[in-house]
Length: 205
Image 1 (tube, one colour):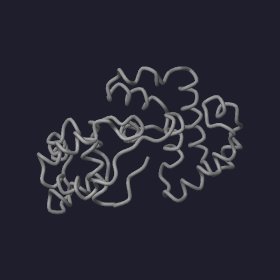
Image 2 (cartoon, rainbow, N blue to C red):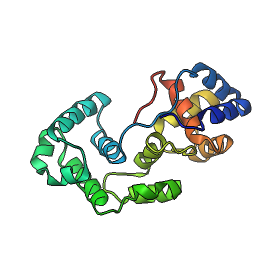
Image 3 (cartoon, rainbow, N blue to C red):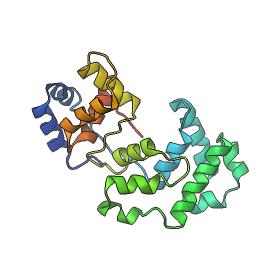
């Protein structure tokens, strides 16, 4: 599902920023798209932490094969040893279990997210062990398609701004935030284009 705001956001970014205009033209054949159930997306993000994309895909394939359904109830009913046999570390098994418990207990309010702010959702998600602010921000961009998320700690974003706006010098956090202010209320879209500028393959999460 492509965001309903995509064309408007891209047009406004292009009109106000010549670098963005180039990206919008170059990458006009694709857009940000949501994928997956919220619980599955978050579980997969935990699986992929601190390992390569290839390794994460391999572990996820075994994880998916081991469970008939990837749901909070199924996770909680599965012995930790089975999850470990998929290639998950002890810590990641604990994290996924905590995620399942939060969903199962109703502490993650998926049905209320539409009326909640980005900060409120980030606060809710980061109460889960193993989910930090960056992971929550990626979730807001890629799963919830929030339009104005700006992940200041993202290395790819920092690198792209350095290359295209700062003559190769990594911007300070404050300077990066100032660049982000230019792109409001479409900072998620600007971030997506900046990621694409470094890697022509569409970013997925």
